[in-house]
Length: 330
Image (cartoon, rainbow, N blue to C red; front, side, top):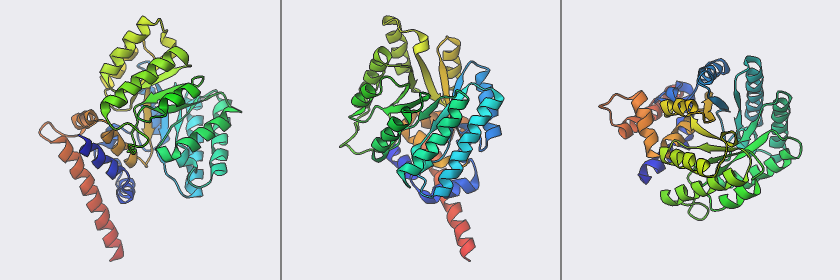
């Protein structure tokens, strides 16, 4: 299935399709895994999840920004999200990506944007999680985290299990609240494991270490085998439920999310929203083959071939975009 992963990762980086996706709205089934394009829609989605005892982390979609104006707009939108969390008293916190806030433009500019967000979040006692992106941005993002942690204690980050250095990272940041994930970007074999078995084994190693030695642990997975393993591990090691939570993405395995919350486990749903949904959606499809099936059940009828259906949708979006651009030129 590696060709499927590579295919969707290729689509996720296609700027023409990304621009077209913004124009054409939440197509290709993304409406089932993205909680709307604006704050009111997103807040309503969170209220419904909160009713099931599920907390949320909110991602204002966007990344790899190269214009200061766009980064500033993203910062202002995230601040509005923080204000909305406070105003509506929902159980939620923030996840953000440094590249959306200007990391590729200027380090100090990005740091200044992050500090504004952190200050607003701190004033409302809202936690902020710094997402990690591709390997080229890994160390600069850790540098930002180190700088922000000098002033703010309401910040955590993500460790990606497919990186060779992730074991060192989880030890370095064991005193932080960490979200542990397998990883969703296409990385070279010089820095990351390529085989699923190696990634899974390292993922469990990180989980065990941080549960035993670290602060609060967010275990982000849709894999019920991993979930069952964690349930057994925390029981055998007398780890209380208030030391960890399970996390899943909005729109995926909804019944299992509710079931875990009912069982008494802390549960948090990763809630993405906004117009810049395309890259996020394609990476979720690339992340693991099962995600294709999860989306297909909600988007396509039973006779539709999942892979061909999504691929055809992506192709159609590209064709529509080309046609619109051609009409403009004519």
